[in-house]
Every structure is written in C-alpha cells, then in structure tokens.
Length: 137
Image (cartoon, rainbow, N blue to C red; front, side, top):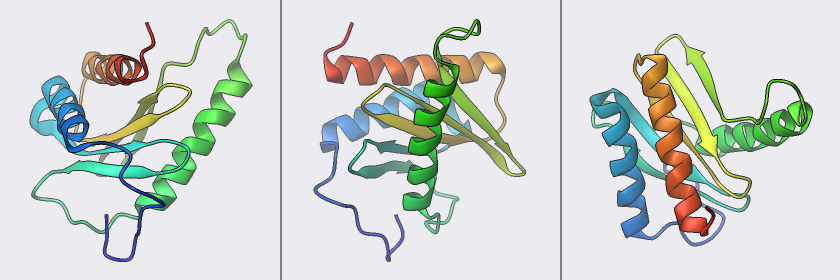
C-alpha cells in the first residue's frame, strides 16, 4: 500500500491469516509470486510484496476493477454451457494477475510467468483457503 492509500476500516485479516494466505500462494507458485492482495466488499489488504518491487501500485483502483469485474463476469456467464466461473488471468507486459475467490472475498496475485497448471494450482489453493475461513465446504 502506498503512503497515500488508507484502508477503509481495520485490516480485514489477522496477521495469522495474512501469513497463511502468503504461505498458500508462495507454496503454489514459489518465487514467481510478485504480490498477494486480499479483498472483500468493504476493505483490502496487501499481504505480500516481493522485495524487488516498488510499493507504488494503486491498490484501491485494482480492487475496484477486480470486484466489479468478478460480479459482472459471474452474472454474465451464470447458466452458460461454460460452467461455473473459476478464476481470471490477466496478462500484462511484465507479468500476470490472477483473481480467484468466493462470493464474499477474493485475492489477486501478481506473478511472473507460470504454466496453466501453476495458475490452476494457485487458484484452487486460494479458493480452498477462503472457503475454509468462511466455513464453506
């Protein structure tokens, strides 16, 4: 989070959960993990930023786009032959952004190059952790 950004309320995750989320993402993709940010409808928290990266990203803007796009995408494709929405991969010049989550919360992870199997492992691990926290089977 940059110096100008102020979260909307108290941090949405305890330190223990923030560490657990970081461990989960880093276990899935290793040193290819650039950053990890948790968000819900009222707040967000960057829980990991790789040491070689600048802390200048506009987290609030990212969260707004990812939350809005998640809702739009899940509504637009609900009931399609494609099946249930699972996760999003965005491709950029210097890396990737993976958005995965549940109806109530989400995580975006920025990464260096990964295989489709790595993206799948990452999204599955994130969703399983969020469901565990929400008490969903």
